[in-house]
Image (cartoon, rainbow, N blue to C red; front, top):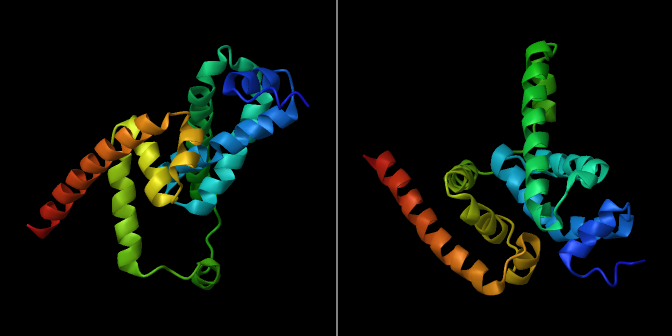
Length: 189
């Protein structure tokens, strides 16, 4: 395998573009959390995010030769994830329109046990607030605080230096806190 040589992401992208499966798998390893988080922010559903992330990589593997500039790989991959997510939303709304009516008992049997409501609400509130933040803060914060990733793992996923990641998390947390505060104070009015 040419992968030993290909520690630099750009080399990995070049190898993967040439059909090197091992190089592609390494790219997946380096970006999978980022892609999962990106989709999770949109869907709020961990299982669906998991499925759509897999779909994203299938699609990416089939069309990686579109990546003209290896440095743009992460951006391109995010765009693929975005279009996979949009397709799934379209598909879901089509299915909802044509789905046969199910008995409420069937639906109950399928429903997983709910989390305690306030825990779900809190997570939902953070997620929707995160969605409103500028792009550069959204993913680092999600990886760190929703997925519990460590710094090293996040710098790998996002291709950032440790210093710039810390800066983004610091500023992003400030924004997140003040955004959550405004939301909370609105509700208590």
